[in-house]
Length: 242
Image (cartoon, rainbow, N blue to C red; front, side, top):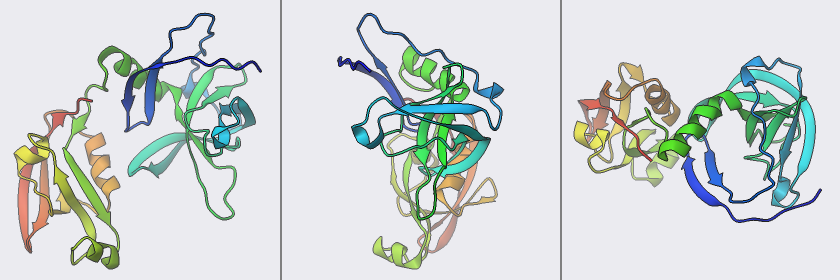
C-alpha cells in the first residue's frame, strides 16, 4: 500500500459524538462512499480500517455486525452504537467500518477492554454521523443542541467525595460558565443534583440523557442540595454553540 503524507486543516470538532472534520487540499484522492447504516443486518460482514497502536496505518480487520443498536455509556454519554467483532485496538478510533460493498457504514469509536473481554468493538452509525458532519462543515458546530453550561463531578463513593471536600457521594456542580443556562438559572458550584424534572440524578449520564432529550428553550425544574438545604431552580436551556 502506497502511503501519502499531506497537511490538513481542522474545520471543526464535536466532542459529544467524538467526530472531527478536516480539509485536505490535494488532488487524486478517492473519497469514501457513504453507505446506509440503517440497512445493516446482524451477521453482515464488515471490515474495520485504522491505525492500531498508532503505528500500523492501513490495517484491515474483518468481522460481522454483532448488534445494530447497542446502548453503552461512553464518556458519560449514553450512546447507541453498532457493535462488531472485528478486531479493534488502541489507535483504531476514528477509522472506518465498511460493508462488503466497500461503503462506509460506521466510524469506530471504542473497544470494550478488560480481563477476558474480546470481540467487542463499537462504531457510530454513519447515518448518525452524516448530519453532524454537515453541520460542522456549514457552521462549525452542531445546531439545535442544548447547553447547561456546567462541569460536573460524579463522586460515586464516600472516599472519593471526601477527596473533593464533600460529605456524601453524588453528582456535584464543579463550575458554572458565565451567562450560561445554569448561571442564569441560579446553579452554583458545590450544588449536588437531586432531580431534574422529577427524575432522580444518580450519575452524570442521567444529566446528559435528559439534556439529549431536551430542546433549546425548554425549561428544566432542577432540585439540588446546597449547604444542607433543598433548593429548587428553573433553568431555561440555551443553544450550545461550538
